[in-house]
Length: 447
Image (cartoon, rainbow, N blue to C red; front, side):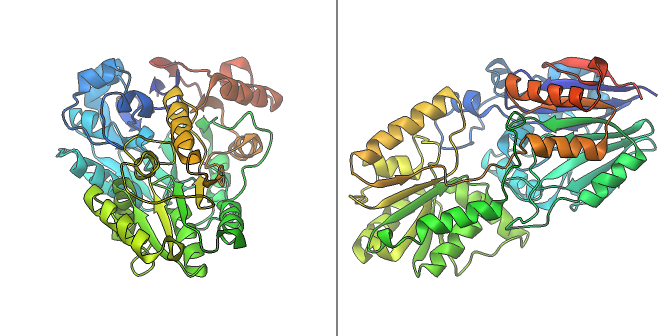
């Protein structure tokens, strides 16, 4: 039996993730993501919505994976499996998936977000969308069984995708953290990961984003405590408060809403992308924000709502809105630049419950946004946040737990992936067991 991997995309830079695993004459594709910065250069929309963009143009712009690298495997594909609901892992599905006669499988929230994404882009795929419950299994063929092991991350229903083969399990752990006290959903399924070691793990693709940080990533509960500490402060009495965070971070949004209720403020959520991700969560009964927050999706209505908040008194409200990266078309950027007529003044608070994703465009956008905000002398609270990615000690724990024969560092800058390589060497792995892969590289995995 031959087990071969192709690291299609996401290994020479961070984003547009895609990996293909071939077991003899059958293939499983993990992820079909976009490179957010390259994608955004081709569209002037706030987030993702550009049905006019075609596959070839997007590949040329390095905005989506070049799946031509596995063209001879096209007829072998048995399943397309995005690991979770972030766009750098599933955003290319509207452009690439229909080339394959294979179902798209993942956990309920991921599939529901994908449905919204396809609707936004007016795309109808021939591929069946198949829901696999967290910790569920699907037998694809005699030689391949797919398993979705529950793990934690900054969006719900993230899974470690496990491809079971006669040669051993291949674990796709491209984004995760080890959160034992999550504010939404269950902790990681450590018991199942320990069983995988006993059954035999052939290889792991391991999230390297924070692998060079010699620490454990704090729980989302810590982020909630940080938010509570900032928002419940007496200094905000009689002042306006705006919080911005990742639209797909449903657990974070849930925490902000709960804190707003404790403060006795009316919670208003503004922005199309936030409305979309929340709708997906509510449609599968993951959360229920009705009666707890008013959600305003469309731009015209956002302006009306802000004018009403101004009239009523902004001290009565807690506003949650898009704009955490300074996106020019986001609600917060429009408020800061004056495109939305909302009176933010001295001592009002702007809380960034996020980190700046370190790309040139994001840094430039955030600098411009903060410059506009400072002109009004508002209070700015940055980095009220905890990462959704495993730090070095978390990565080490997973490697020690699974004891894979092969390690493929993924989803990280060179320094981060080098940290995984050093860690593997310390754990006794040889050079032929650690694969520092590049885009389009093929590796045959020996048992």
